[in-house]
Amino acid sequence: MRKEILNLLEMNSRLTSAEIAAMIGSSEEEVANEIKAMEQEKVICGYHTLIDWEKVESDKVTALIGLKISPVRGEGFDRIAVRISKFDEVKSVFLMSGSSNDLMLTIEGNSLKDISHFVYEKIAPMDTVVSTATYFVLKKYKDHKVIMTDDHDDNERIPIMA
Image 1 (tube, rainbow, N blue to C red):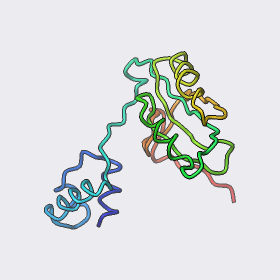
Image 2 (spheres, rainbow, N blue to C red):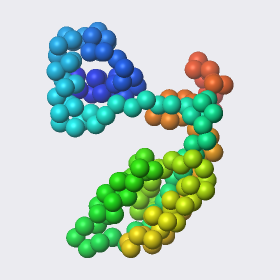
Image 3 (spheres, rainbow, N blue to C red):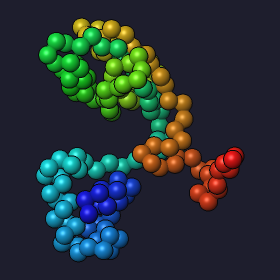
Image 4 (cartoon, rainbow, N blue to C red):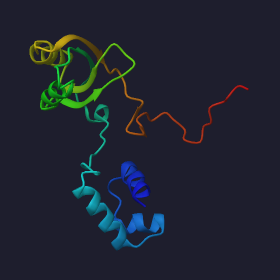
């Protein structure tokens, strides 16, 4: 039942317990109790609204910042990742494998210049940061499982060549 509830909430966090109960064939009380338990256990960590800022005349700029880190003995990457996570500009921090980057950050700013200043004033000078690589997001096509472009047909099938 948990995974069914989580999958539904991930796609639409505004669903009520009654709506979820009807969708999964459970009682409203069971669903409400399960959601409350998952919130207390920090399985559900928050509820977010996905906004297409391009439609609101916003100058928000999103960037992915790859960091090469020199890990601290006995702490690995955790200390620096927690420190970086505390900056308001940082939306997410991920420990990576399979690339030259150890950490990947998603950050937002009001301009390319804001992001550049953030990287060279706050991130690059940190003692364990060896190098940075900045990638600016030019357009979002899909974010959090939601297609962000208006010019798509949900029923359009992509041809597969055999």
